[in-house]
Amino acid sequence: MEKVMGLLTAGLLLLTPQLAQATNCPVDLPDAIATHIDQPQWERSRWGIVIQNLESGDDLYRHNAEDYFLPASNAKLLTTAAALNALGPDWQQQTLIYQQGDGADVEAIHITGQGNPTLTTADLKAWARSLYAQGIRTIERLTVSEAPPPYHHPTWEVYDLNFYYGAPVSGLILNENSFRLTVLPQAVGEPIAWETDDAIALGQWQINNQGVTSEPGNPYALDITGILGTPILKISGAVAADNGPDPWDMAVLDPAQYFLDTLRSQLLQAGIAVNTVAVEPREPLGMPLHETWNSPPLTELIRTTNQPSQNLYAEVLLQGLGHAHPSQDGLIALEASLTNLGVDPDSYQLADGSGLSRHNLVSSEAIAQTLAQMAKSEHAQDFLASLPVGGQSGTLRRRFRETPVAGSVWAKTGTLTGVSALSGYLQLPGQERLVFSILLNQATVSVTEQRQAIDGLVLLLADWQQCSTRDQDTLPELSGDRHQHDHAQGQ
Image 1 (tube, rainbow, N blue to C red):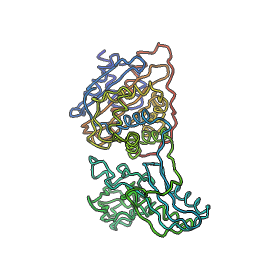
Image 2: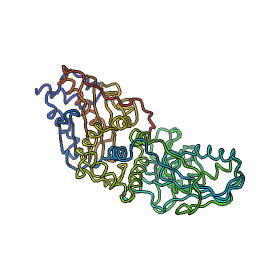
Image 3: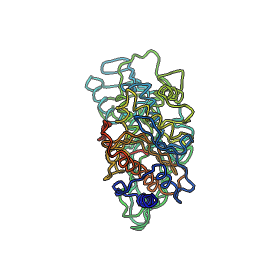
Image 4: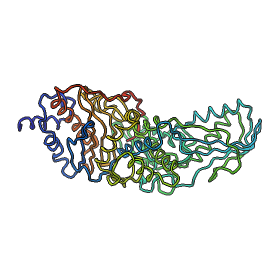
């Protein structure tokens, strides 16, 4: 036993795909996991781990299972489960278009949104062209309505608010309230230059450029930060002349104005004059509802929430839960939905829907309960299909490649500074289905090392399962979609 454990530990420390192909079996799973996490690099870190047999509900391993941890984007598992359970797979967000008058000269058009996160400039272009095809040539007054700011959760870190993952959460959302700013090195010693894919979005910011171009081969040392309370983006530091274009995905500053300005631009390009524009706090009374734009169904929204780990989508779902129950805010409605599902409300305390807030407190027990209950619900396959698949899709596309668990792990990732998480399902062919939740907090090593350690635990679990159940009968496999598109963003 001691020799087997020694060989196992050495393989885990290497953390390579060869780990899962070792011929030595971890005879005792708790001892093997304890050896894995009781290493010097984790001396100041905290682990919360639950591993369960999905069919029997038996615990295979628990470590700090009821303690609170920062979940990072593992909070999205609770949000998407609650939304699917409460709203149903066909629920959609709506954008409402009101119109006064018709003919070539329309008196007024007003647009109000409920948080559809999927609208793009291409959608506005197509709509503008359809209005032109209907014979409209002039809109006397074009307005949109939006609640006043703030559009961010008060516990989000200020630095995060400048970037796409901290984009404002608004009723009217266009291009996920984000745009790309590409930094371009120049000649050595010269200020850096930049370009953008969206001049209207960038136009809301003032650029304070203090970035310079350094000698070829120099280490990367550029940063972009906002100046609190101002519309200023400060570019500082240096980027090497041979670095090449350097893309940064930034947040829109004023989402309603951005939507309105972009729409007016598209209308003008389509040949429709717009005489007056304004952002208003509410839709005008008495104007007839003319048209409704529906978002894709919830099943698609939760895929974008979980697979690329899109924070904005998660916050929209949280708002949707609140809108569906006007007497409740989103977090209260989320808790009610999860309680109805069978998740202990004392096992978590959420501050937001995405996991970006460091005020979220979640136990691995809460996540394991959520996963187990969703696997038994009528929405099991929709929920499963929303999760990244190891080695194949989403934020797991580059993890677990060329290992025996590739294509057999459906799980949600999570990353903040000092925090890594992975929770989901494991089913190897012919093996029993397992639920696992692994939360790591207060880590002092690199993100890469954190992820390798977590992946090593999953590979260890798979190796143990194959050894201990090698002769058991084959069980039916999970059948979630294993080939979802990776949007290549998120945590």
